[in-house]
Each structure stands twice: as structure tokens, then as C-alpha cells.
Length: 149
Image (cartoon, rainbow, N blue to C red; front, side):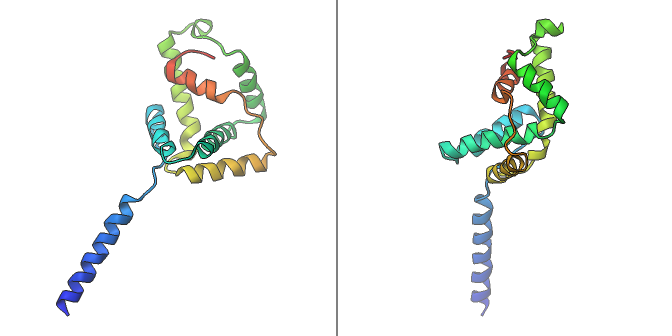
């Protein structure tokens, strides 16, 4: 009887440890750098098609937080983004400002898995009949290296 109880406890422990090791990576939006690291971890487990779906979903989630006037302005800005020189700031200040602004837009994804982000992005695009997105990948790259695009 005692041996059976110990075996059940051991089995429960093994199942618990195994299940905790199988958790999917989630988005960490505490900073821009943490977000890019967590996205890399999520993408490592995805097919090329699902990676593309994840990128589209991130764009939709970020872009959906703007009102119509800001969306129009962002679309216009993405066609000819202002440079650090135009804004009278150093490239480092420009990059840091963009990163801080992006973190605010990334917050709705905190703690979500890739599948959850994709589902949320799909839902947003479906509700809006497909959001016409500006060149957000270029804006994200700009935040990463400080070069306006």
C-alpha cells in the first residue's frame, strides 16, 4: 500500500515536471529588446508560413490601437519617415524614442503565445475588413538600428 502511494506521488511529480517543460514561449513586452528576444524564441518553433502569420498579427495588433487620424498619419510617415536630423535629435535619441513608443504598442501581447497572437491579429483584421497597414516592418527595423526608413 505504501509503495503504491509513493509510486503515485512519483508519477504525479514526473507528469508535473514534464508538463512544465513543454510550455510554449510567450511574448515579453517589458522592453523592445525583450520583445525581440521573445519573438525569436516563438519563431524558432514555427513554420515559415506561421512566422509570416505572426508578423502580420503583430502589425495588426499594434496598428489597431490607433484611431483613424493617427493611422493616416502613420501611413503617410511610413512613406517618407522623418530622419533624426529633421527632428533635431541624435540617432541614438531617435532610436530610443522609437523603442519606447513601440513598447506601448506591444503591451497587448504581453504573455501571449504565438498562436494567441495570431488568433488576436486574425480577429482584428477580420473585424476591420483587413487593415491597410503602413510599412510597420520597416518602422520596427528602424527602431532596432536607428535608421529611418
